[in-house]
Amino acid sequence: MLKPAAAMGRIGTESAFEVLARAKALEAQGRSIINLGIGQPDFQTPEHIVEAAIKALRDGHHGYTPAAGIPELRAAVAADIDRRLEVAVDPDDVVIVPGGKVTMFFAVLCFGEPGAEIIYPNPGFPIYESIIAFSGATPVAVPLLEQNGFAFSAEDVLSRITPATRLIILNSPANPTGGVTPRAEVDKLVAGLERHPQVAVLSDEIYGQMLYDGRPHASLMHYPEIRDRVILLDGWSKTYAMTGWRLGYAVWPKELVAGVTRLAINCHSCVNAPSQYAGIAALTGPQQATRDMVAAFAARRRVVVEELNALPGISCIDPFGAFYAFPNISGTGIAAKELEVKLLEEAGVATIAGTSFGVHGEGYLRISYANSIDNIREAMGRIRTWLEARAAA
Ligand code: PLP
Image (cartoon, rainbow, N blue to C red; front, top):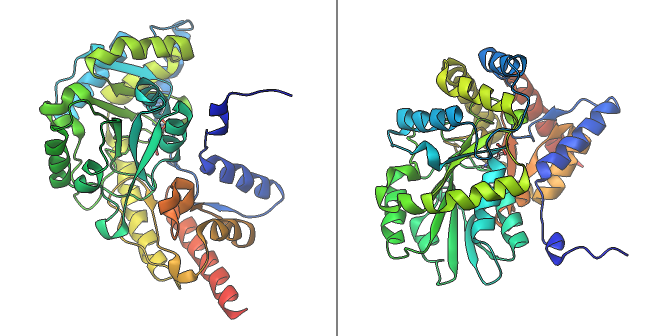
């Protein structure tokens, strides 16, 4: 009998991958499934980025690279942040990792241990709670509420800080809700954080370029008073449709860079070279493909919100960022997980139960609108047919 570490019993998962596997299995049996479950753009990586990776391989970049990333890429990240956010970043503080998730894992490893508390959004990206628990720290949930547009309330976050708090995880624009925290709320939060100088902040801004209806992106990088304790998580997965390339970055507080680089050396050594050259091309090349993708998401968002609000028992507020809608399903009288399973198995539509993102996700479903307008309309029709048949039964 094996004796795995107790921490293995505390690790959670991201059920989007399980739903994807089930959807694929149903498709393999000949079923038609529309996938509104998985959180990845349904666009191809732009051609000039793909070409840069091919060229890197042809040019002989086949070996290890520096653990924190090749210098040209770290410099390109700093220049990109300067261009977009008008904030000067030292390239030495940028650490390249295989995907945004790795930054999350490392940030929690930097601060999480028994006795420590880490504050995180709920509903939120499920990996936050999972790795906090894995680290032995106590996960402290901040409920994100529909009546606040699923934005953070500074007061809700600040009131959960105790002497044991080491790290606060923020995510705006947010997965799974599409919520965007307004600048005024971030201002209040930062002002309150000045009373807690020992608390670090992990700001997950991976959807920072996916905003709608003119909502501004309130980056945590804009606050010089806390810059020495902010970890900025970002990457290429969503902005450049590069989820499979496994490429992400963070800007770290200077005092953590050496330790994080050691984590990288202990864990993955370095990111593969072609992905990094692709990353340079993405940041330094034309940005039109990203703008076109966001414009396509904006059009789909209108359709998905309108169609959801027309379904019996379902209502949906406007999401202002990312590519998710988070409809309230409580009027159907069906629990989130049950509805997810029934819609997949019986209606042929993959969605994700709100409870996959934490206990405060009960009563909601996550709908990814990274799919064509025709497929979104077809999916909504299938959901309507299924809900009406159930009501008539
Ligand atoms: N952060 C959030 C909020 C996400 O939704 C995701 C992916 O879904 C990630 C980070 C991780 O991105 P990556 O695929 O680059 O690891």
